[in-house]
Image (tube, rainbow, N blue to C red):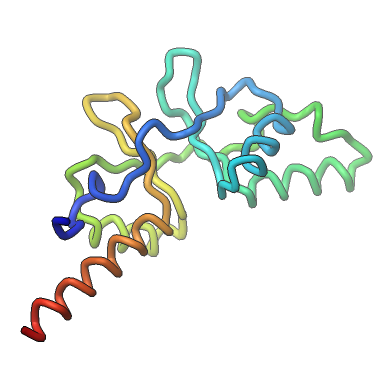
Length: 142
C-alpha cells in the first residue's frame, strides 16, 4: 500500500451532508446515528455553506433549554459555522493537519473543481500521519 501523503489518501468520499434549512434535531439524529462529530452543510444547489459541529449543537440545545425554548424550532443555518475552511484532494496531509491545529477545527470539506468530493476529519488525518510515520520507521530500520 502506498504511503498516505495527500488528503485524497485519507478523506471520506461522498460524506454525509445536511441542508442549511434542515431542522437542528434532524442533524443531531444523523450525528448520533452515524457516530459523527459534525456535518458539512450545503445549500439547495449542493454548495458548501457551513459546518455543523457537535459543539454547535450542544450550544444551541443549551440555549433552547435555558430560554424555555424547543430545539425542534432551530434550523441548521442558525447554528452552523459559516466560516468554512476547505481543502483539496491533492493537499498535503501535514499542511492540513497544521491548519486544523491553528484553527482548532476538526473537519474540512474537500472541494475539487467547485464540488464537494469528500470530507476529512482530524481522526482521518491522525491515521494518515501515523501510517506515514510507521512507514518512515520501517524503511529507516532496514
